[in-house]
Length: 499
Image (cartoon, rainbow, N blue to C red; front, side, top):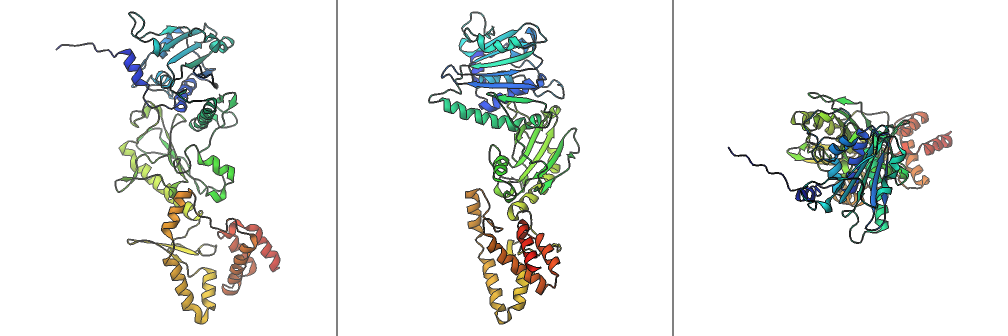
């Protein structure tokens, strides 16, 4: 059997690798991964606008590399992805530094120093591939002429690494201006704040990230500890696997968030795009949102408004990369078949809770549900094989009181209630919700206090006169009944007025 040696053509292969799909933010995140793996405590990123001579530089205070280690790191595919790695290693394919850098720039220079040793420097330049006689993969020593000053900060450090991108042909394209560079820096900051938020968070964070001399603050997808959350579950261990854990979260309804909290919690992609699973590998976020192909009846769940408050933290170890189908860009993940039923169950429970909160601010009682110490809900939800319908609760204290006192008008009132039930503009509500990206304003939102007090007084009168409660009992029940529970000051005023 004949054997042929068929090495790839350097120029063609490197140009092809540029099209893997990195954005500037995801490419820089790959470089930060390398810095974290090298035990860095601070990573500084700088984007310099200088027209066609613009550059990007990443400096870390990690362990650094000697000449041999640097050469290995600059080779494509230097590490076998099947090799067992340290549990804290954020790499896998041995391609991240090169492919991430080539996706944005034609010249990649890396300088490094280990333990006070000499500074070593190697450089790839895609414009010089195939121009050196007898060398198909030319890896140059030292920086490009005129770029030496960009590596000078390393002279002041005992150890660390500098990664320099020049010839930014995928960033500085036709029409790109200084303003575009500023906007790009903002997008990069938001992305890094999301991807590395668990490294950046806490009183003693594991990492400090600096972008253009400004510290990057972590973005918390889960609003941890917020009193308005409907769900913040314990951490569950997934069975039939090792090191996979899940924590389920349902964020507060927007009515329970301040405007600044609403904007921050929406995240980079907005509320709908950010719903779903957040997959982490060694605390590093790989996937932010989406339902991992899970669904019902053979159809995957879409990202929709009704479940926008559901976010599920999923941690996997780096030993599970192949099983979870982690790609080179660290942007996709697919759970093994044997784990899907457990994840489906947890996701279903979380989605159901999120849907209830979204639809009715966390307060909804099924027809078959038991009475709580609050006033009965004004609306009941009926689900059957024919579909879902909505009925005005006849046992609501105010409704029941009016019907009891209606006399000959009772049939007309019942007819009016049925007319309202049969003409709820469901389709229009969903259309407006989809267009506005928010639920319609209810719960006395933006209504003057005197209008709220009119309804509150009627409810109070119904509880005392019709239900036979004492004033104190009636006020206590109203204080726990939506939407009056959001107007405790008016309830207190009603108490003083009654006394």
